[in-house]
Image 1 (cartoon, rainbow, N blue to C red):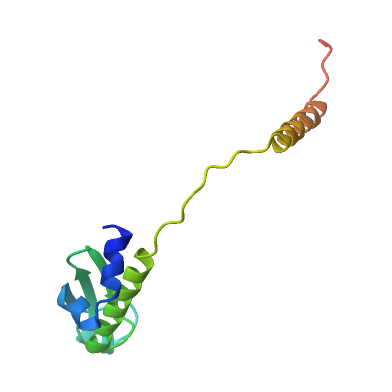
Image 2 (cartoon, rainbow, N blue to C red; image 1 turned 180 degrees about the vertical axis):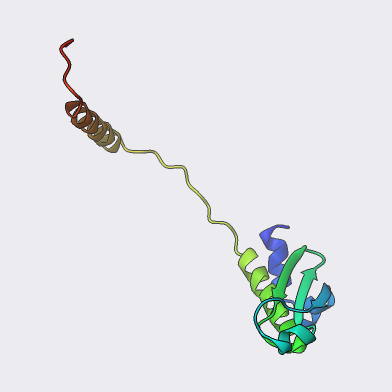
Length: 121
């Protein structure tokens, strides 16, 4: 999708975004004890038109995690709706090029002066 298509999605309400999603709920892993082990509170939402997948497990409430997923999707739409910055080709000034080459020669001379002197020269 292009950023213009995401810009259209930015203006959708939370209910409209949720309507276009497939929702999976499952048990969380990791620390949390009985609260984690007994409730299907983790929510994974996949926005079908775009394919964006977000997961929320901040709360022990499935309802709050669903709302958090929708917020994450809306934030992702906003992020992707920003058009890319226009890049302009620039030319390196001749003075900068000369300075760069001079620094490179000086570095080369410095390293050459560190070499071991042999009897061949």
